[in-house]
Length: 324
Image (spheres, rainbow, N blue to C red):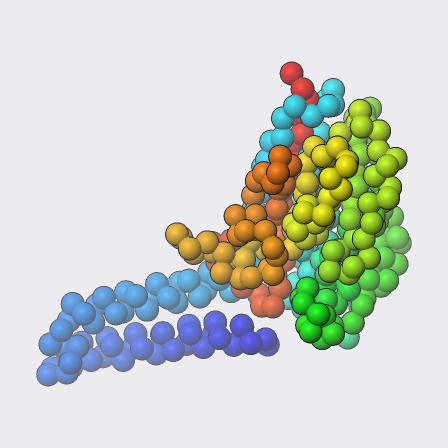
């Protein structure tokens, strides 16, 4: 049981206990709340709201999968292409095989033309087990749909971009994942370009290694046929900042990493910090950076704790539309 789990359960328990005491005091004559019943009822209502939020954040929202549909127009293709984009599964500590099964079921409902996995497929936060085993259900769809993936900071066990924190790694487990994904027949994009044929038309994919790994290069972009559309995959949204200025810009950049903050509050926005240089508006959704379209998914798993509030796990459906 991690720190955040303990905090949430304690908040729910203490709130329920306070409701009991407040309700009791309202009924007992001459007590403080008996003389101020309206205040007592307001306090009880607030505590009920806190309990509801705690239950939602821990027991309900993390176990949802919502579909977030995005339309990208004027792509140089002749037929529409539907992409299922999933990032930050972070399988292992909080979610295991059953969660991957649920993802696979959702993918089969969507029936995409292409599946892209945006890194942090495993959690790698101190466990000693091979978490890649929980991705086994992907075997059911690896022959059915073309699937590509990139690596994230969690595969490398890197929890921060700062020099001091980079030394506090949980261990590089990228090779374990790579071995498993090769067995599942799922293709790794690691600083390389692939141009698969989707619905009798070619589309190019360039996947960047995680920028915190400091093992990145764009050399293969020179092989990109500029007459073909390009999707740039970077686990960390900051990857768009280092895209080569001498290259034609991609038609779309897809990123993850942020989890949308995991907790989003009205008028405040994301609470969790993803330690990225881009402003917080880039934590989720479709945005523009220096003329480049970038979509950041809030991801489908959790980091640090099994908590989400007003920020449910999502499976992004990217609909590429042909030029008119």
